[in-house]
Length: 564
Image 1 (tube, rainbow, N blue to C red):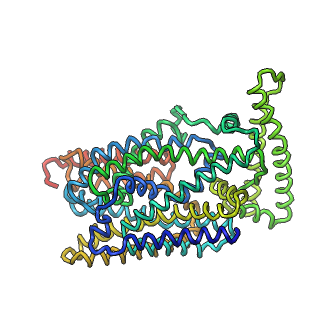
Image 2 (cartoon, rainbow, N blue to C red):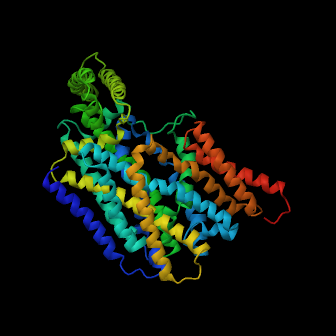
Image 3 (spheres, helix red, strand yellow):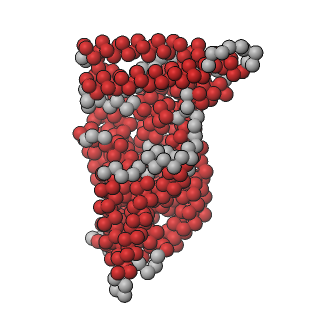
């Protein structure tokens, strides 16, 4: 990185912290601090909701996902617009009517304190861990690629977030997320434009899509009923709808974003805005990844994009020799790619071009050979050092940024990644502190204190959760597959929580004891089902939701006549 990149990166991050602290100064009561004074307009709500969900790993991992597997991942989000409509019709009006600070307050009015506390506890467990990984995931990638100290990165990201989140609460989170989303959208658009600038002059956008299509990267829809296939239209529409309902309807990190709106209508418009924009945004991020794939059809690419992987192999003389043989083979394939691609385009666009050569088949053969070489490289890396991460999809986009973008733009793109990490972490800390204050501290220990006391308490809990998140991030590398675990931990809890809320909304004869017992039983079953890998994690949302409803109904019918 050059001096200009450092100046842009540091000044951008400092601006976000100072701006958020300044704009949200003077929060003197709980409504101001936890619900942002209910001043947010619909576009602020929508952007804040998106920024909360779109962590740094989204902008690092999603292009890499498309690079390796194509556009099919977008199906994961197909259920989100459906969920937004349901939330706008049912969840948001109810929360506004009851004037709650957290989603879990409603459960006490419908059931009892223990059900409210159990559900809030589920949230604190899964979101508390997630806050640490939201910091850790981009930090470990940036550390590996840039050579920065991992612990310093974790602490730096965490401290920056803590400063403005403690200072301004929900309003600070919302106003900074608008700036962060502007940086994120600008960065992705700049990267997209520059990819085409770096392609050969004869390659148009249409040509790039054709090249990607021949390599199987443009297959968007999969209507198969293969239960083991993680990303299909059906998993997106069914499992994705349940996941989005759980996340946006019952997770306080999201609920708090739209509870800060100026009115019921502003909350609903913000969520509909999110529902309309989220799928196109994810489509665009995946398309950036596909274009990065096209770029590397004309330019040399490493066998493994994680620089730590090559470094580990090169530390062993024998492994280094074998790895260099694989690199030479990859280079030979790369040299033939452009000829095959140009032949394919000429064959496709010039009907008078007479040849019996099947260039599309040759391109697919090149890809198959390249994949085989990469698998051999992974095995060699693991044989040399089993602790090195060989799944390199998270490193593809950052490799492209650092090795191809001009000075200044590298700083902008790194600012984009760190802004995404900060925005998600800020929302999580804000929600964790609010839930701890309202659902546990105020409800059980200090109900008669004044507003200023609870503002101070929420700030203290924000600081506490921030320190916990930094601690988890700093020690996350002591655990195996932690990033993968956190990607599915939401699904382990969300289905159960959604089922509890659906029972509260629609099944009025089910009482508190039945729901409480059913929730504990269901959570145990879901954890076991995940542990034995009985189904893809996305279906755990459906399974958990249906399971808690069935068990609660059974318990209530068996105890028919009892008040609780």
